[in-house]
Length: 382
Image (cartoon, rainbow, N blue to C red; front, side):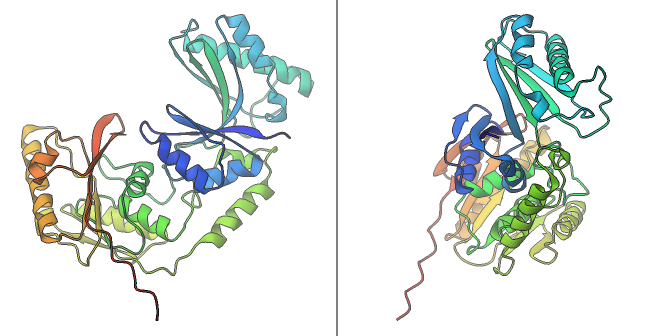
């Protein structure tokens, strides 16, 4: 089989982070677009990218792209693609769709046309008139943008932020993919202390520990493409073995977090235990006003409460002031906060050194970065 075109979908604003991850994994031919990064790979790369990417939402196989101004063009363009190479006679193949600024604006109609075209193609190759769809699942998406159709196969299933270690959830949790992005956009590394004074269910700290110990984020979950004949169980087994062998859990870490909500800390501890990180992170029930990180040259990374009602906004303002006061007491630390609060810098007490617009779900936020001094380099041995 020739090289595949693969797509790593990305939350808005994180495309460059996903592209950097791909390059670090060895994929150098990346093409960055809004909401996606396209690259080439083989079947084994479907397994590796699902296991290893920390900030992408899902991995798609790009089956084809063509102009589609009419239903006939959509039907013929879809039928011409090699569906028989992927979908067996008993495969389940639902079709999802979306359309933006295109002549074919009825998504249900487009889904129906694509489904019909694939059925007609599979009839020719599988020599049958009926498909039970009781086998492995192959989710197809038809995406129309300005009369250009892209058809993909979803290899991931539930989005990649569902790592498999979180059994309980708290209110408005930060997605694991976003937490990983915040860490990657900071100056933190395993050699520095990390603290989150509004840790909630502990997502930032758990993701940091997994990054530090090189734990592939997808190791504790399954994927629909594990059951695809074209990939085979051996490739998935090899990719998982490779990931397990890559773990380096002997690196000492200084990770701590606190939250005023005892239930959130219970959830955080349970999630850390499920991720194989029991005892690695120091979680405490503590208001931010009493929190003071230990150590020098650390990083504080947090996603403080947003506050929607007036009373909550006042609490958020007070919290940001407390963070600013904390920064004054630990001058060697760097501070990173994701917040939609327009007056964050005012309440913190100084302008951020860097800002980056990110979307936490559909909420527009700023990732504010206050850069402290870097740790001194160790002297070379004499």
